Every structure is written in C-alpha cells, then in structure tokens.
Image (cartoon, rainbow, N blue to C red; front, side, top):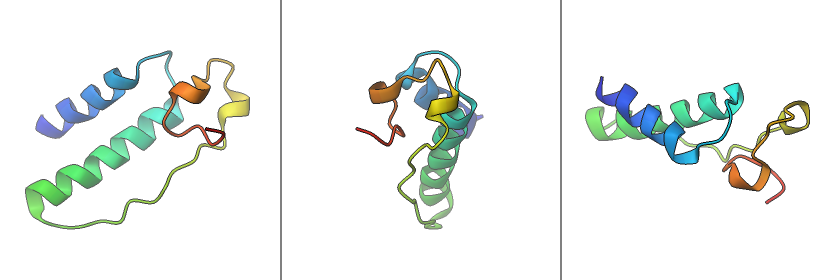
Length: 70
C-alpha cells in the first residue's frame, strides 16, 4: 500500500487528463525510488522523454515532466 500511495501522489501532483504513458513513467520512477529506500537496491533511472505526445490530443506538453520539447 505504501508504494501505491506514493505512485498515486506522483500522478496527482502532475494532474491533467489521463495519459497511460505518463502514468507508467511516474509509476516506474516511483518504484525505483521505493526499492532504493526500502530494500537498499539501486536501480538506474534513465532520462525518460515521451515519444507519444503527437498521438495524444490531451497531452499536457510543457506541464508534463516527460515532454521532450521543454
């Protein structure tokens, strides 16, 4: 439940309409942080840049942390 709560907080912090890719990216990055803190296992975080924004008419663009043109 703790990880789920953190992931949902991350999603809520960005706000905006639903975006499956953004939700997945936030969840994965939250999992990496959670695993490091809880289990002392360090996983590498790549710099994620979304390539799906042209296909999403509701993309947050500059308000999305994964938008590549910022």
